[in-house]
Amino acid sequence: MYKMDSITVALPKGRMADKSFEVFASCGISDNIQNEMSRKLFVCDSESNLKFILVKPTDVPTYVEHGAADIGVCGKDVLLELKRDCYEVLDLGFGKCKMVVAGPTNKKNTFLSNKRVATKFPSIAEEFYKKKGENVEIIKLNGSVELAPLVGLSEVIVDIVETGTTLRENGLTVYEEIFPSSARLIVNKASMKTKSDRIKEIIYKLKQATERS
Image 1 (cartoon, rainbow, N blue to C red):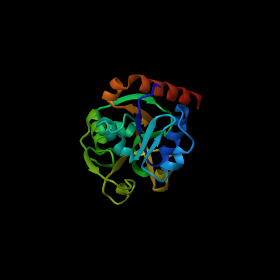
Image 2 (cartoon, rainbow, N blue to C red):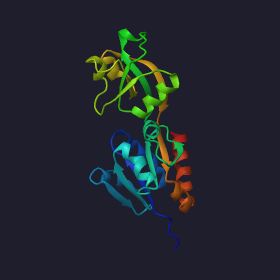
Image 3 (tube, one colour):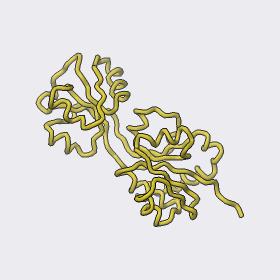
Image 4 (cartoon, rainbow, N blue to C red):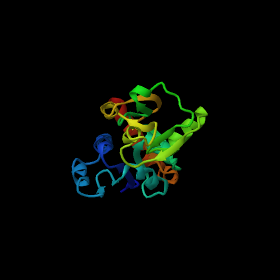
């Protein structure tokens, strides 16, 4: 009996995980997989012949690039920041947010030629300001970047926002939008060749699922 190629899928922990499972349900995964993933980091679904691993969102492209996963789900912001060598094949349409420049509301129209920019996304911030021809100092942070302008660490921040509520609560506002972001399906380049039929089938089913939602 013909057996489909086994496909390993890297999914991001956190808010995008539940929505990822919803769209992958269209590929025939069994109902109990999501419950199992709440207790484990690696689950095999024999019905669909898919294997799922749950990793930090920023690690998804690394797993896919190096072939530990054939396909993965991650935000466009992560892809642009890390620039991993893999194919981006589908906008899954959920996890929508925006990469923005933000700062204190009362200083929105203040121009500084040598401003400091606090961010979790130094590559994106550096490229953005390079294209604008502005000389800035990039300060890499791992925690809540909203604090930086409030305590004088930076004049502005570059960050990903969904509703803007956290910005407003801290007296900040959006100055500029850099790009919109959403969840993307990415594929390992070697897997696209060696497991082409199976991966194209998954892409097709996911595309149908996103168009219906």
